[in-house]
Image (tube, rainbow, N blue to C red; front, side, top):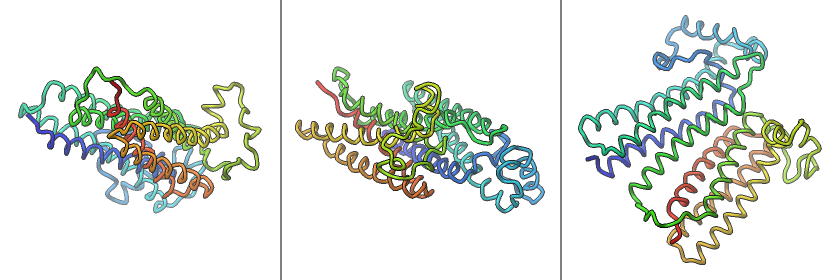
Amino acid sequence: MITKRQLTIWYGLVSILILVIICVGAITRLTNSGLSMVEWRPIFGFLPPLSLDDWNVVFNQYKLFPEYQKLNAGMSLIAFKKIFFWEYFHRVLGRLIGISLIFPFIYFLFRKKLSPSLIRKTLIMIVLVVFQGFLGWYMVKSGLVENPKVNHIRLWLHLSGALLLLEYILWTLLKLHFPIDKRKKWNKLILFWTFLLCVQISYGAFVAGLDAGWIYNSYPKMNNEWIPSSILLMDSFLTNIVHNPVMVQFVHRHLALIILGIFCSITWRLKQKSSVYCDLAYVILLLLSAQVLLGILTLVLSVPISLAVLHQFLAVMLLSFSVSLSYLVRED
């Protein structure tokens, strides 16, 4: 059978690729590169344009769509290559993730080194990768229309798919290395906090998709207002909390403080119990504090790419640590 070390290396390398593709996805979005490839060729799209004629073909295809006609009219081929690179790199990484799961899976399967449980779990991972490819194209298609801008709900779905895959792999490794007595109960407060963190990351995707980070670049007030008058500009409350960029930014900035406050309480409780996982809580608290400060800095500096990518990277790391804490901290 496959050893724990082999499985950890395999799944660990896949996890690193997922983390990289999430960061590249952030760069792709921030550089407005996501609509540069107007075709989806999941099998034959691995190679980039190799000749000038090939480049002219893909550039002319791009010119047929509203993003070029409305936003980038007159763009040079050199400028097009720059935005094409990030979207192409993003898609290649997606294929590499699929390959890094499928090929070792086939090898270990034929060598009869995988238990039925690992076969099932790896197949779920492969299905999630394939589905993520569909979600990516579903997102891109939303911007190849009259309004050349990807739908923020589809952007959120695409990010959520990547995070679901990453955390499923992490959960599998945690169960492998740290078997838990099934009779022990979940820590409800940590589960609730993890749920709030997921909501916060979702709002981060909404902020990105709605370009809400470029409005109200002041802190703690929003243009000298604690509660902007345009926060309920749309018809219903539900519409506002999902589609209104002012409300979305408002929720994202204030939910961060709520999450930080709750986790301070969690850390204090673990310390009172002399929990062996108190050190992990301290690491999360440190990352969480850095994330809040980084979010504020990203906002007031009007979303510089380097800080925005680091902000997304820390969000993924926080989610992974929170999933680990949720798994490990149980009650008798």
